[in-house]
Image 1 (tube, helix red, strand yellow):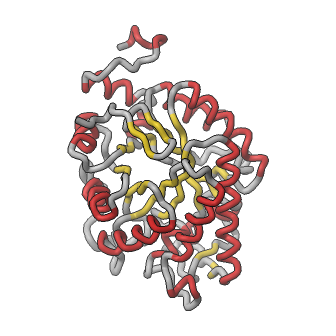
Image 2: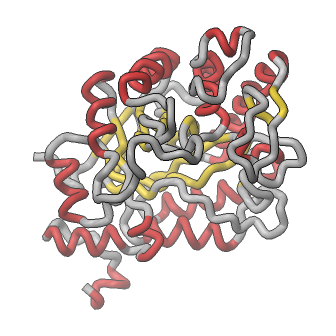
Image 3: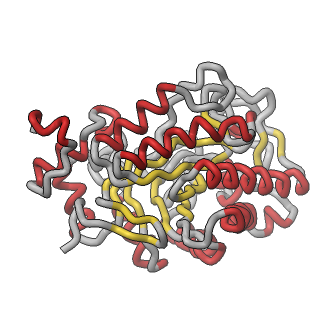
Length: 340
């Protein structure tokens, strides 16, 4: 029987357990240069010490104006590689594997003088109106994703996650609410995301998995649901996505189908439906902080990996505590055994 502490392998990514620390923005690059600092090092390495099998570094952007804020990480320059490589090496030394989320905020780039997007539609009444990218600029954006992935591979990451969720640029392209283009990227809403995946795969070793994060449901009037997300996910799978990280929401402010995130495991049914429809590995996320619940998601084969966000922000050693509660093998570092 599979459980939270079963090993897992997808391509060359071998994990000692099914516990994942999801990407969570820290907004802590005080120099605004996109370079990881001591905070990021301690933040990620402490979760490796704390027993997580897989850690995903927060949203890391392909250009300066692609950041949510100027305090976010970037991979638009070779100068940003060494600090990330240092984190990767340390995480590996504590027995965990590590990926990185590559992204562009699009119209949700708060500090960009002029955000860009598929179409000139602001996020809300308090947001800047973005400039619609030209067709050539969209193609150039694909190249920026390619180069960022190349740098991530150079830094030694074990997997790459492409951010296609939460209302950021790729999500904006595949959502009919935000893509009103009349060029090739409007005629085929998945074209930009597919090209990003293909560019990423061209830079990655053949045995390195590519993870695609999606919002499987939009909580807005006229937004898409699980049926539509299954269809665009099929296109992303065909383009080369190996694993789907299934989240929801992030596009717009008007709740149409009830507010998301009001109960435990609220996104797990979406992950299960993607898994069943596409026959691909999936990661579940969203209020899975209870070890018994997280263990059940794996045991019931609703998802292959479980992401614990808030719980791991509160406690870097969440995984060690979960192992104790579930009476699984002792994974506590010898230095901490007296505490367990």
